[in-house]
Amino acid sequence: MKISKLFAITLQSKIRLVFFVVALLYNLILGFYLKDYLVLSPTLTVFYLLSVLPTLFLIVEIKTKAMRTAVYISMILIACINFAYTVYCRRTLPFLALISLAIVLVYFIAFADKAGKDNLLTKIFVFVLFAIIIAMLFSAYIFVYKQADVSLTNGQATLWDTNTVELADEICADCDTDEEKVKSIYNWIIHNFKYDYRYTPVIQYFDVRKTLSTKKGICYDFAHLFTALCRSQNIPCFVVDGNKRDNIQYHHTWNRVYFNCSWWNLDVTFDTVQTQEQGKLYGFRIIESVYLQDEEYIITKIY
Image (cartoon, rainbow, N blue to C red; front, side, top):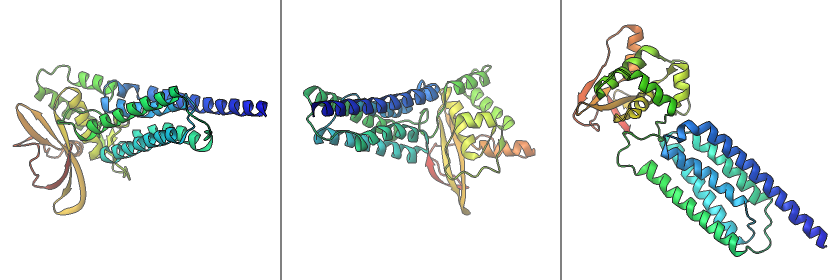
C-alpha cells in the first residue's frame, strides 16, 4: 500500500514536471518571437508576463479547494483581459498567451490530485503569485484603457519593433524638424507601397513585419504603418476609423498627425493609390483639433 502510494505521488510529480517544462519552453519560444516588440512596448510586456506567471503554479502541489479556486480565478481573469485586449485593440498576439494558460489549466483539470492539504509555504506562494497577477491585470487595464495620451503609445492597435525604429531613423536621417520627418515618412510610403485589392480580411489587425516585407496592404495597414513610423520618432499621431457619409457600408482608415504646433489630416492610402495612377494627392490639410469631425466620413474611432 505504501509502495503504491509512493508510486502515485512520484507519477503525479512527473506529470506536473512535464507540464511545467512544456509551458516553460512555450513561453521561452514566445518570448524569443516577441523580443523585438517587448523591448519597446510596455503594454505587450505586461501581457507576455500574464502568459508566463501562471506557469509558476506548476512548481508546487496545489490540492485544496481554496488554493485551486485561487488558481482558477486568476486564470479566468487573465483570459478575460486578453480577450478584451484582442477585441479592443484588434491584436491577435494575446491569443498566443492563452495557449500557455491552456497548458496550465489542462493539468489542473485532468491531472492534479484533489486530495490532501496545502502546507503554509504553498499557500504563501499561491497568494503572492495571485497578488502579482492581479497587479499585472490592473497594469494591463491601465495600459489599454486609461492612458491619458495614446498618440505615442506602442502596443495597442499600433505595434512596432526595434527594426521599425531603425527603418524610421534611416528614412528621417537627413531631417531636422518634425515636419520634415513626417513628410519623409509619408513620401516613403506612397512611393514604395501598393494597395492590395485582393486582400479582404475578416478581422483587420496591423502586422508591421508583414506590411513592411510585402510592401502591400489596405488602408488599415498603411495608416498604422505611418503611425508606427511617426510615433517611433516621438511625433504624436492618431489613426482614424470612419464610414462614408453617403455610403455607410464603406469603411476607411486614415491619419491625423501633429507638427508645427498644429494637427494635420492626411490619407496615406488615397495618396499611395493616386501616386501609382499619377492623380491628384490629398496631401496635408490643417485641422483645428484632432477630434474635429470629417466632412466626408462619419468618424467611429480615433486612437
